[in-house]
Image (cartoon, rainbow, N blue to C red; front, side):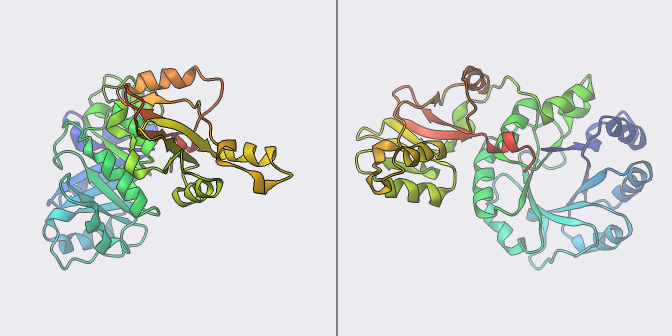
Length: 335
């Protein structure tokens, strides 16, 4: 996941000095908040004069057209307009070497992206008040990320507000492309250590697994009493997650079929594929974790395993299936 440093979160250093220091740590982008003030383009000129790092400009204005000449004159790689302030008839400009994005507040549904999807490469999910540094992260953003990825799989997700080390781990796991970090990064005693934590470190977290897991209603789940080999394979293909989960008559977690289980079942019955039964490909003793575990507890559990896993089912204290956590994006790196 890329980290975009919110430069205006540091009031003590000049833009030039801050840019040079962040470049020394190989920051991915410089985030500039523009609260309807074209004077920010003087800072953009300073950045471009001292660095080749891309600029991430977030514009909050009800008169976006006045910014188009400035954008054409000053190279800015990512340009985001705040949805709630835009006039209804606004059309995103096409500017050479600039990618357009739409920023939305917590209470705005992701469906508003529909009317701008052809012009925008990404969405910026605001988790705190735009332009205010140091706010708390809104956990409802985790659900919005999942929903947006399902609806717009070819668009990127950027997140801004309250991103610290523990939030960053979850965002990386969910496949977020870029996160804006202000107070956590720039007010840290050691910027390099903070940047490392945001990008790659595993961190002890106050968030519980239930805060960001994929809920059961979004997962491939079958009744183990009524499923067939055909229904399992069809369900796995339809959801494209690489697994199918099973429950029994009490809604307790009863097993899982992964791609590996499917392969083993086929190999076992290679001479007579018509004889494959559901029970041949269901693992009734899989690894699972608990919704009340912290991230640290889940990771400690996984580290003890003698094999690598791509996903893990989540249950409550009564073994009722509640969801799952997938690790595809952490393994693949940046999405």
